[in-house]
Length: 322
Image (cartoon, rainbow, N blue to C red; front, side):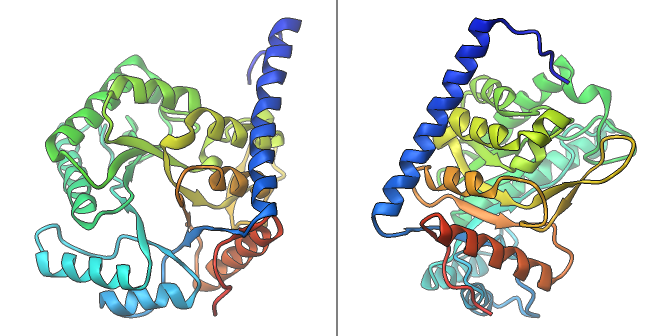
């Protein structure tokens, strides 16, 4: 928990900054309401039994999606890469992210080396396909989990290694059509927008961007109760560096200790009006990707919720689809 012992001046400064951020978001919303609904890109996994790029792209559009996760592909399969680019472009479906999801700070040196090689390969694939971003977490020093909490995850050594990993990956691949990004986690650096600003400055590469999952920043009662403030802070501080976002929700289970669990958008307490408005305020058409649902019907529920809410505030994520 953060200390509440702040001066009146500090309080007024923080209040003023928050008011400015709120006004900026509201101005953007008002502008959208006066004109045509801003066209946005929503995406999610699809579940047809096919690896044909054309069929996959058409299934995304059937469901109203204009963004996708990277389909199965090998970086050396030139023909498949060309086919994916062609078919997805024909359906106006952009590939939002290529997940790497390997522990870049595994305590085992052999595993860590192999994991970094895999992440480098995924970044190279993302660049070949023209994906918006390649995303991973910083990793974990845990010996029992590939991405779990551990005391070393916020140490100076961990932070330094994260900076070095990002630099080495970008310098090795030299991407020109994609960005490398790190997902914030409440228990692993970077834990929030201030940490991410430090990381951006330290990495010092134009090919480094921001992938935003607002739920992952929430890690305390204060942040959960006032998640609107957390969401606004993310957009205020990270702004145009944000390339793609994740869509999920959080519920607080009735348990003696803090127990936050992911759920389908609309079932939890995250302020989605502020989240969608923040995304819409960014340059271009930043992608929003549903994730971590257990079955197609849950993705349908999340999709319908996002699209219905978006229309209420003057945004357009496409038709509801099937």
